[in-house]
Length: 379
Image (cartoon, rainbow, N blue to C red; front, side, top):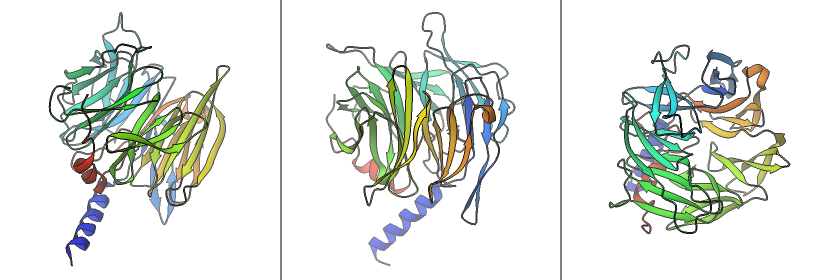
């Protein structure tokens, strides 16, 4: 076998090892934590009826899976915007195989983190990094006891017209990638190591001349950002347009190949209208899957091992088979026991580089990413 064939074979092994099956968990505005079990057999995607496993976690809870160094766990965060009388968001952690009882009898406080938008674990499983929206901060917490560690807070610059907000996070083997809304017209993507410092080698920043809503992985380890005019992809030292949209793109998610799903959301007369699409990377075709659904909640996430897509759009959760785009599950607030707020997969690992920050790609993409990403201008 020549070197090229050997390299390709190794990449396939890495990508296969990085995939693992998972179930879908969801939270509701009534403070519930629920589970939808997923499995695949004979090319058929099977989904269970949603069931509530735990209750009493506020009115705006966020769920995210993380790796604690030895096993996958789930964190559920009761979020607050109160910076004056509260010390921060509250959190419970669960074993994904038993969501009926958290490890803590009382919620722990994530000190200084308010209205967390994204939570990801480090590769070694020692830390959870959070995007604190209300104070524009990235904050590290220990996976052992949730004690606060390093942090970074964006300081408004001259000319900034609104309060900066930390929106979205990614991670790879060594780095944390953060998206900050600098003001209503501009955002910044930043690369940190675990220290979250800006005055050290390796830190980088790239500006995005739009109000961005999320960052995520696309195929071949590429980073992309969703914003008010579409989706941009990071090439070298700048973001370049990949997809233009008439409506703001709020979330996107890698499909089972090299394309992706994305959802738009517009606000008119206090009504949010959402649409879901599938982008084919080869043909460049955009196929609508859901249109004119109302509601403010919007999120996409991929179960890589089962090739399943979970979507909160409007007031429902939709489950799709990514191999054929068939809708296999549709659940309203009655079935979920509340309007959905967030969804997450139950699997996370530090052994194969997989993370839980939404829809991600690892394996060969991470290798390429580590080699070439963020060799860019410093702030």
